[in-house]
Image 1 (cartoon, rainbow, N blue to C red):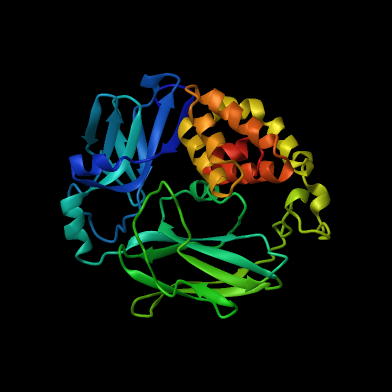
Image 2 (cartoon, helix red, strand yellow; image 1 turned 30 degrees about the vertical axis):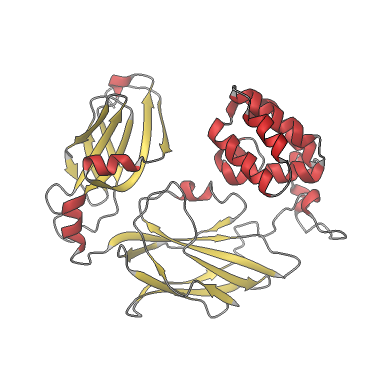
Length: 354
């Protein structure tokens, strides 16, 4: 910074067309960066996941700068062990990339990248007495928040996550306490969104207190191992279940008296409480995805879906959708809340739906 100013950034989605045109491959998240005083920012540092045991091939990493006028490649000022440093002319979209041809030459050495193992535990299922522990194998420069906001109903378990992973290589996961681990093997892909799905799913009895997790490469060599405490005293282990999602006759769990008031409301009241913000903030693209989910689960019919889609103004479409679903009662309203959480986890968190 050259002077004091307010800096705002968010992650956004890569356009695959950019990769073909510039002959590059994503090597990190794409950021949309804005500043109250554009000239106040002179330099940016972008995290990379390259191993720096030896000098990187010249020109392997660069920063792509995306503006309304097109894209340009910015040459790094410096590449440290953890970041690519670049001087910036002005702010907009920036993302770290690998040059495709040099990347192909580099991976021919089966050179590992800095990776991480992230764990997310789902709430127990009272009917099956099982819970799922989802295991993500990801590049190290994917921020935890980016994964968490796509899985708002799961709890991140903090463990030492660092490991070394090779792009396009297959890995297996062992867990002696599991009733099932799937898939048996999975390939690690150096992907940077927009979606982050579990690499492995572990099914466990709900009374499991500790598990041992071992990630092995194709040669059965351990690349990561940890004993995981599922009942860490520093975390709330009790998951709160809204009354409308509870099974008939199912009692409240210990600790649910701390459930925020908005989560105790019936589904239609919860929808009404966020109605105005939903009309103003939900995008047209996400509204269409929510409509598709509600149609799939028969919450709305084809006629209602077409009526919503016929609205030219996004807020009008959102208004008709939310009012139609609220009129169908608590069960339908809860289904829409879940659809919003799945399609737009960030907005769902902001509106306190999850």
